[in-house]
Length: 508
Ligand code: HEM
Figure 1 (cartoon, rainbow, N blue to C red):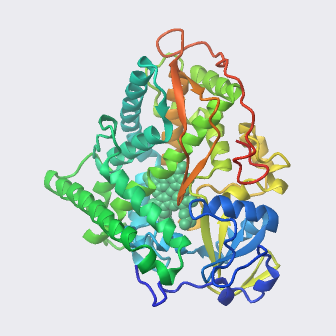
Figure 2 (cartoon, rainbow, N blue to C red):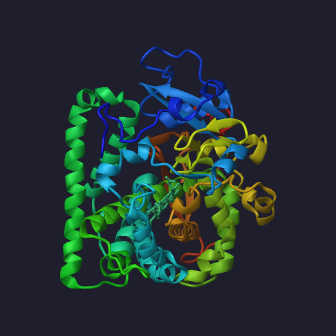
Figure 3 (cartoon, rainbow, N blue to C red):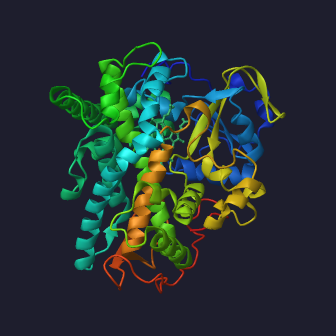
């Protein structure tokens, strides 16, 4: 990463330089010299700590940590203003800039001005068209069948399953197979594939860099830094092997890698360079699985805790899929209620929980806070998704009907943003939604999901969010092969745990 002498990414702007009336923006009490607003916060849970602050401080607030001051936005009206593409653009903020050593100018981490962003976007966007998605569907089914075989074995042995671990195997295999024709063999391994370990290592390191004073990073993170260098080298090697195997074998099944290697820009005829292909492959392997894995895990948690929602979802799967041995591509999009469950889970726990926006020119945020050109703010998505003015006083309650078509139409635009916004919003949105809806449908159709009544939701943070330690007991539905009566499991609705909630209204 290009760094300035103080250890911060080149061009990093602390809020004092961009917000002329910064003093008017509330901040937490008890600011400590040098350290800043760090009282009561843990380096392991920066997001959840910030969510708690948000509740106290209101829709726009600021925090200072180790000489860096950040402005956070979560009120619906302010966030909608930041979504105005005429006045604001993506900001490659600290969290993302920390990933540049891994992902370089790949799609996710590219600066807006880097020509490789537009080039890669134009070359790769057709890889997410409806037609391309329909081509991925059978491969997604194959991978889901491996998950099901794994869960069947656990069920036969009366064992619970490690939900985030298994969802990570599933989503890694899915993006590896559909994107790059590769098989990491995750379901055949007792421990995570070393690629996953290295990737989690780099994400965790990037997050730690956010919470350690930049000037002290070389000392405090010396060992972690060495480990991170080794992790990046491993990721690079894995990707280089994958690319050279494809170059030797010739084109695959028209996947993303074929596009990266073979497709020229439709207008300029330009192609992605070998170094950029490497960055894009890493980007897609990382961005394409960790977030979807979290989304599936949270959805399974909520389904296991809300038998009435699980019963409705399952009844829909039985109705739409009927006796078909495997669902067709079109039958997945017709699972409207399952999709609402997913949306509601992404509302409460958007697994990529923040994105940053910068002013294209001097402007006034929401008509209230002046910003200079280049000034930026972080949109705190889990709080935007709990804004009581948008979602009502019970915003912390899980209720998939918030995503009924009429309810969606009645809400202000730009208030549900799990996939970011504008030109730099998630290119893999449809991919993730199709994969996750398909897998939820398959699991609901086959199993009752028994929760551990003692489990209370704890959320791990490593740039993305994941329910920590979530285990479920899958039980094959009693009648027939895969289908069964649409009867809710007689699971007791456990009491909501307030103790673990980052904010008062965020129910378990
Ligand atoms: C539930 C799953 C997912 C969530 C919640 C999610 C979330 C996001 C968000 C919030 C952004 C914008 C970040 C920003 O503004 O800085 C983003 C961008 C991106 N996502 Fe996703 N994502 C998901 C799945 C995927 C998948 C499956 C893929 C690939 C197959 C993917 C690839 C990307 C890429 C390449 C970008 C950068 C796009 C650009 O700047 O042009 N994501 N994602």
